[in-house]
Figure 1 (tube, one colour):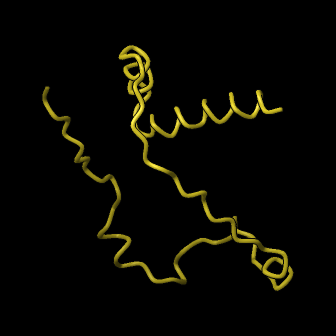
Figure 2 (cartoon, one colour):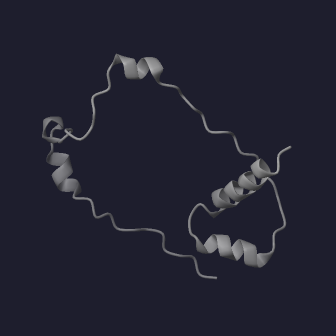
Length: 88
């Protein structure tokens, strides 16, 4: 099986960005964060994952892989949804 070329050429105009100064950045669509925002802010750390080995049908794995990057996260989300619906 051939490995896919994952290197993508950036379409960012790095030369223009490197010449910019902070004052040149338009921030009008970003609200200013005041003290009340930080008084109420909470940090939510992601739940640590546990590595496991599981046997799944090949067609199931292929179907999830076709959806692209993050297919294992999607499998986890499907299993989580099932578990939440079937909790007693």
